Image (cartoon, rainbow over all chains, first blue to last red; front, side, top):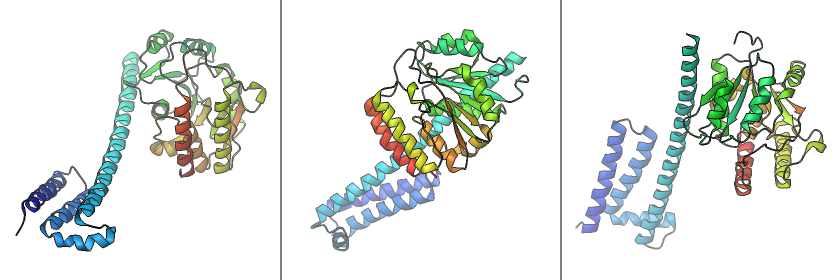
Amino acid sequence: MIKGIQLVGILVASYLLFSTYNNYRKRQIGIKKTALWGAIWLLMALLFYDTNLMNIIMPILTTQDGIQTVMVMGILTSFIFINQVYVKVIELDKKMTGLTQNLAINDYLKEITEEDR
Amino acid sequence: MNNNPEKIGIFIPAYNEENSIETVLTNLRELNKSIPVFIIDDGSKDNTRKIVEPYGFNLIKHPMNLGGGAAIKTAFVLARKLGFKYVITLDADGQHDPTIIPQVLEMMHETNAGLFIGSRFIDPKHVSMEKYREIGIKFFSWYSTFLTGQRITDVTNCFRIYDMEKVSEILNEFNEKQYYAIGLVVRLARRGVQIVEFEVEDIPRIGGESKKGVLRYLYNLIRIIIMMTFTF
């Protein structure tokens, strides 16, 4: 029998999984990110569905109980998330710098072309 | 630009330099008129633009502050678009004497160098900077020499002449917005570009304040050491 907390976990994980797929479909994220986040949310859904799966993960993470395992996995996932956000910020900053530079150059070139006329 | 057969341009990045840029521009006006001067205003919030405009030099305006490295990259991209063969860079704070440019150009034609760097340490009598900065520059120069196999004594000096053909090869990977000077030297040297230094005086900045504080300098020291070591 599925408990209330399991149901909430499964629903949240399913929503995140669907959201990841949706972002991929709209080409907002690439195949690598879809695979990474898809795997994370799928694992989360499975763990909430069958809590006995914790017994497989606990020896790998050398954790004592289910709560500790969930905490460790949550922290690791947040590290991945922070890294993804950081990479995205750097990427956007680079793009914005490039656009600003091109804008300044194009403005100057337009100005001298107009002066030549 | 037809009266510029050598296709050389002087590029000066400037950010909040209202106290010093006027002297630099006055000195540049005395120079050989056939070399065009470009001021890259990096989003200054003071009167830098207003001071530059009456001189009639080419003014490129960043709508916001991007950093010295980004301003230099703008200079390179524009120089490439205009078909320049050489790019001369100077600081806008008056630390570089533009009147020696004709001599340096003559010297450059006698070598096969792709990068000419002004050095304040060729004659140590010229050095008058703060001790911590001198130690930092000497360390970076020693480390650059170690990494590139070419003798470099003043790797942070931005009074430089770049061969645009060589710069074009690394332009896409050059994205340092701040503290770009060292990375650029290492990148070019690792592409086999010959680096030659010329003697310059250590002139204190005319006015305003340096944008490099001690803590920021230390943080960037560590960051640049890591970057230099892993730049391929």
